[in-house]
Length: 399
Image (tube, rainbow, N blue to C red):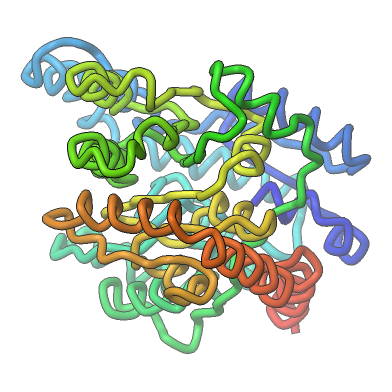
């Protein structure tokens, strides 16, 4: 959503208002971005009742699973009682009446994702708005829950168009949530091309790496579905195989943080990979790391659609190793502009290892894949193409 807000072409066509769940750090970063890009959008932080952040923090506690469940129980009861919905619904109604928009564009991480997004749809419909767009950024999953099924019917009825980045995500909404196929609009993601502030040698110097290393980079939340463990297993296999002393050349930087970080760090220690694998943490300048790499790797094993890090790597002309998921499989054609691997976890570690070794040994293939990846980005995922698709949809939704 932030890329939509920062797109100059869209801002020239529409007056945009941005409401979001109030978070101090997010608001500060957003305002800084707007100032730097000279975009005059007024942000509207809203106090939204939700358990997502609280439950994430509870899950990160180093206590028993039983204690975690007991801590979460009263908040879960408050949620299912309908109090969260009532509070959010009333607040959203007042906000919508205040700004009086023609179009509502709801952005959700997945479906059902954040329930507050559904609350906003109900509020918008109650306020007599018909041009409600709903963006779903991950693959929806099935449910047999009666309450969820009832919500689905109302969301499908009230929303004019659903936006997905991939055809697979759109198909999942139809097949798993019974949404109307004619309401699904595919608009692939884009990125704003960032100004690079560091060179490869600067990144290497941070980690005391030699200039001739073969650098792998992944930018992703450190969580199970992103499959970092299998990437570490691939590195460990390369070490154990001992082929051509590859481990002296191959290095991996994981950019991101998340609940799996302690487990991943322990794996690195247990397998003596501390001089091969480096944890960079969350980095607002992650594009510098992608630009520094020889190969970008995203080893997702579940619940993936079209990660923006893949688009960044494509825009920078980097060869990519990725798993065969939704938008990634639509953006990457195997052995033309990247290598696509089966996400099945049984063989993923071995397959990642083989792909890394192949690209290490074949610089011609690396160059070919990176060049074609950049061409694909420019032809299908550029800012201008994305902007025109959004503008066309907005005009269609009010016609």
